Length: 441
Ligand SMILES: Nc1nc2c(c(=O)[nH]1)N[C@H]1C(S)=C(S)[C@@H](COP(=O)(O)O)O[C@H]1N2
Ligand SMILES: [Mo]
Image (tube, rainbow, N blue to C red; front, top):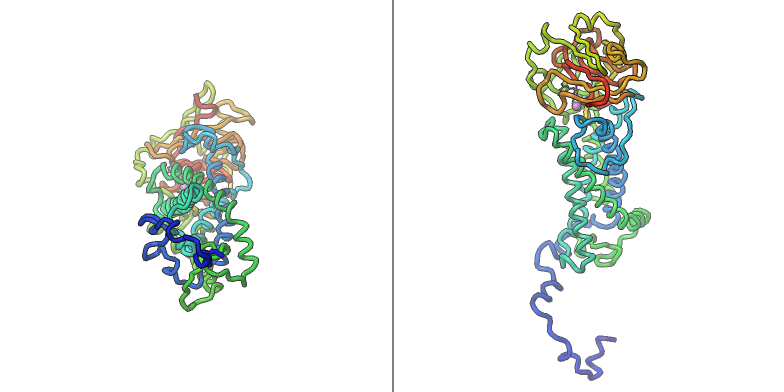
């Protein structure tokens, strides 16, 4: 045994160099959070971290998938006006034509995205709390591979924080980053998910082992304790299950005050955390408004008697007054508005002229192509949008002039607005003045 070496007469003491001050500092952590004894909660350990981690594994996967769907729903490959991330390169590898059925598709995917994102906040915070001693690990870097691992954790924690903060700001403050929110949230998601996949690959087996044996409490300092168990635990004030239940209650409370905005209608009253201060009023036009006419600078003269609708097709152009538009065959469709911010309305009964009928005005048949929709609004990323041929050809896609039996209000897009089944709210351009069918030239 090593301890007996000296007793057996070898000249051990002089053969070992005394460690220098730097080596001594690295061997013994400085006082404070770098010392394991500093952290005293008896709750911390592989079980608690694994429970929160597994919830996040499921939740973040759902967020990532619904986020990718949301991006695809904008049909960004269709036209430059649709794409907020023109430099995405192969990150758009999975894009597909967004379908028009079921007509509540985007309402569902984006409602799930925003509600799950909000509800996961307490779980994310609890997970970070459960591993905080590791942030102060000593020595900070033991080896090259340890350094790389810690760097990946920086991307993981930083990426998670960035995605949650940008997402929640967008939901709460209505586009404080006009246009660029998409870019930030989109690229941030790819950085975050890269670090997330690496983290899951390394930690999943350990997490599964920890939740399978909830009774096993590894001793501090052992490999299975993973640096999470306190060597000097204080007396418990709540059980580990109690802590999980508390976090669960926090999530439940957030769910109760958030989910109502995705259901819409009467349930919106329960959405205490949804942005307020813009009452849409009552009556046929009394449902949620994204941007009012005044807020985007629509002048009464833009949408008054001088308003015209220009329909362009290959080699043809037709200009209609509002009366001429009203004289065309009017059709109805019950469709919701579903915003990227997570709120949506129940189906509203829209009526107006089918996009296929407007395509027919310029000589296009049942194989109508894509259309560029332009608003009288000057500037702003939502003043024009390109709709794909499958959206144009759906008989529920309208240039609506009425809603729920009344003329559209100025805030809902008077004299005419687009409404398309299954699509994000952004595709439902208000105050439309020009439709250009066909590939952009
Ligand atoms: N011209 C124009 N159309 C627009 C917008 C806009 O800012 N300008 N906002 C879009 C967004 S983001 C949504 S969610 C819907 C909201 O429609 P609503 O205000 O009638 O509910 O309109 C869309 N149409
Ligand atoms: Mo929106």
